[in-house]
Image (cartoon, rainbow, N blue to C red):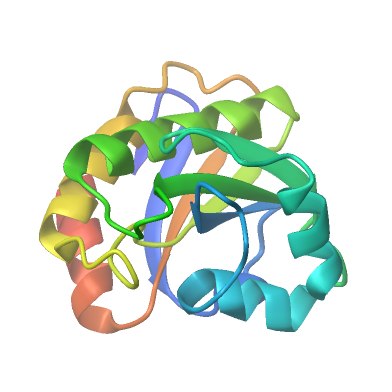
Length: 170
């Protein structure tokens, strides 16, 4: 779907291999990269991403910081670490919403034309994927013109999740 000049879509895939300039890591407020999406990004892009992120932390849950993409393949240039949970590794609708908004704001600030987001808070945080789809798509739809952003892609782990996001986008 195109909203103003921003295309919003949902795909199944590996966020570390997606065609986007920036990818979002569903982070904790301390910015260490353990399991889930963070672990996948660290394995694919190198521990330098985590070192760079942790140098900017801790941050408040709901906030986001930007690092380089380490050794991730082009066109990925940046990793946006959006804190969907605190040190207790618990999340909520308010935190998923704030982290999504912060990630999209950081993407626009750095001049990214495209950004890829996972279903934030649904892995380690245990947040329901149905609510994540609703909240995250609402935040993506709030963009009016999107600044530099031309494409927002939700990168999901399976077809069921992709359908939830795609139906919400429609």
